[in-house]
Image 1 (cartoon, rainbow, N blue to C red):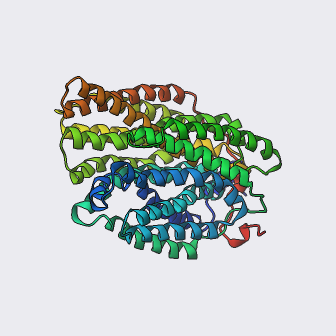
Image 2: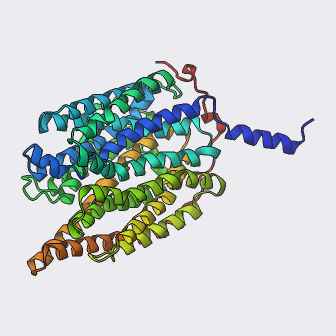
Image 3: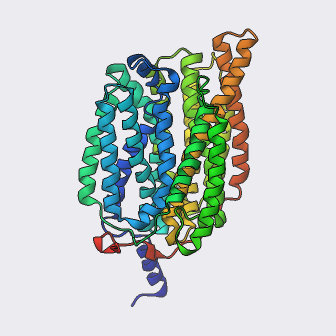
Length: 497
């Protein structure tokens, strides 16, 4: 006869066990998402080569990155509706199929037009896959094991963009730029075939109305804001549309979009349910994640500029110098997830925020004489701090939501992530550009002006990071949701329309 203590231990073990097949399902989704997110930054160091090969201006070439982010920002808000309406397996196949098609377009592009079309098509598939992964983890992973799973997702969200420039530099050093896509294509096709066989329907679906007006407002709102921020960040001096115009359109459309969702969410007719914001743990974690993503994307764009423009280092070496930081984040994220499962988020988030702040302030001290090993060490410190912050924030924020809001919470999280990336790029690059321009006007050399601009931009980043450090003290462990959300991996889990 079992004692009450033994029965309690068995019950706890049952809570922590995932249903058979769940690990394989998540593994397939993680690999697919990693390949997709990698493409978000893989073009960053290739733009100079593309400007020459395709005979295009810098502002035109930048659309290969801006168009990707813009499409992501437009499509992601609709995923809350899509995941309510359609089962997991067809959504995976559609996402992976569209991404593979876009990769084929880009790989075989004879000119800029088809290359841009390929990038936009890739972004549509990517926009669906990221929230699909997060929603699936929340559905099939018991609360007691979510930290380690979210640690793996952190690798996808942060490490893939971080090593994108490294992979791009290695490929461009030996091959034509089209090989950046030819290499990815077979991987995406294999993921499509394997996922088509292994991915099962583990989410509950039902009939849901599509609010076309909200779709249009969402596109204007998030598309306008991302485009406006990108225009500021890339200092598109030859743009005929001032950056404040799309920003103003985006902000007004966002206000109307929010009001419409609030009026329709009570009876389940909202395109993007905003009730997750009523959960303090979700809103607080999301706010801090915004600052973390701004720091990540700001560093991703400034450090290559520092290494190439101030230190005179070539593309390949730049990519290799940034690789250790990405590897540090990749190695630490799963361990951070396990620590979260045991201790909760507070200690991890506070210590991680302190490390991020220290790294950004150290980056502000870099100059033309700084030792390269020190640059690598500081970058690795930043990525390690971000690893300690992002996994607990995602787990505690999304884990605090009730089951029926998982898909909308994931869509909100992914949308805000894109906005934060664009905002971080805009803040860092704008500060750098204006500072460097002022120094050039005062007679400084180009190298000295670039160094001053990068120094000031990292200084602003350090100031913003102190705000994140202050907020980190308010992060706590969410209440555990019932174990019933860990559905078995079988087609019968889906409620067909």
